[in-house]
Image 1 (cartoon, rainbow, N blue to C red):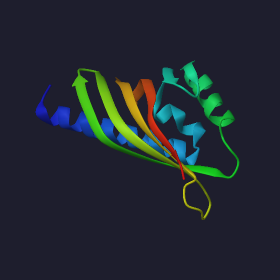
Image 2 (cartoon, rainbow, N blue to C red):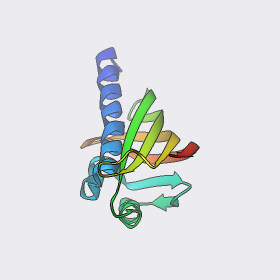
Image 3 (cartoon, helix red, strand yellow):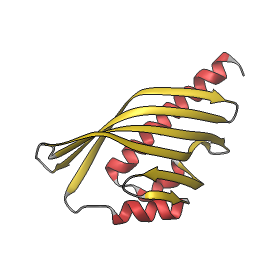
Image 4 (cartoon, one colour):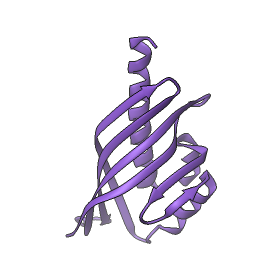
Length: 137
């Protein structure tokens, strides 16, 4: 793999993580296929083990709290590309808020992804979300 290909892959994977965060914040469930593979597996304390893009989208829709919004910030991204697959880890802080109000709840997360190259670009095949801390504001 050339250096320029590796750099391009790392940039696209970083963008993928940002698109995932924005999908959650903007509740654009119809765009889940731009982030996940069809056979995605999501492991988190809130949803246990979800398999398949349909189950993941259904869970996200059912988890919405009326009037509540989120703001995900993702940082400290580490990407290890191995051909058409990449191991990715990141830290994220999620702010939960209502329009015009300061956050009422904040949580720190550790995320581990397996991303794969598809004909449509890099997608998340598996993600493990582990809470690191929470704070009621």
